[in-house]
Image (cartoon, rainbow, N blue to C red; front, side, top):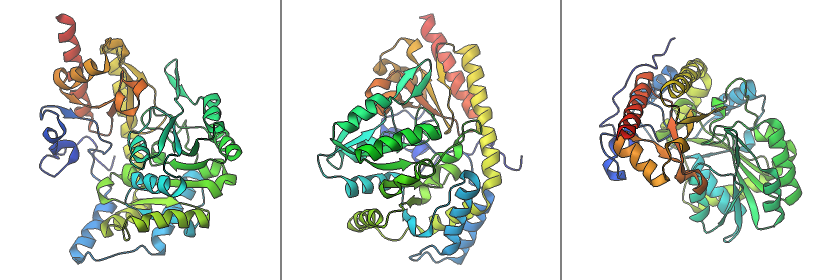
Length: 394
């Protein structure tokens, strides 16, 4: 491998949310953090070189992207997903969550319902509640260790007429499903029938496993281009979240103008100049790094699966089809979610994302981030094994 993903890089004292703010967030400094969705890997070398060149230039004024920026994005999505975005569709925002909030404001009124498929990434709840909209849940079906969409319930919720918008998580965080083209088409058919707007968060699209290829929503449902906001970003793919740049694709001119008006009302205009630089470099030259990273993450998943099977059988891995998370079914521990939270934090000394924050029905799950050196993952699992052994020995 060209890149060393085994290197353990000390991120303490770098203002890292993951490593430097445990006390402020009510956690112990002795808890190993595998919670927030950023990687413990350096960004690709071409990205670092592009940023170094910009820093040496020394001027960080207001910036905008030129045609080469769009060409880098277009080339990436065309070659990897067979999807051809158009230049005029592109709206740049500082983040996908920000874009979700702007879409909620642009496409719904206060009191309207917004559909989410739970358990789901917790900011989905926040952008609905914080904008005085109502959460309409379409709970995913968890059967035989796998999640499926409950299409009967989804149609029932849409037919009720209260929900105006669906926030789609594709691939799905935290359960790791990569929706098939047919599943996306069925969603699209229902949205078309009941006149539902769609905001498709596809930030994890580059982490779909080869046997579960990702389909862009607008590829599966081109007839819904007039009702769709599609969200992408380099932040998860290349570990660039702190540079705050996302690329939002809105084919319909009227819808795009509504979205842009909400951005204008928020007082936001130009993006981070270094974020634009990093994004373009990543999509132009980051492919080799990503392929090596994906191979390493797959090995981490294999290591986790093997460890659980041999040494922690009371925990069940929900097999992911994509993302760099593992969603663990901890019901075998026989704890309430509050007891489970205490166990992981105070006894195992691990800072994970407890399932309850993703939805009220998933309290006995934990989300663990696999984007770390293998030795870090090994340390986390050894801590967990030791805590289970000590608890069982009492």
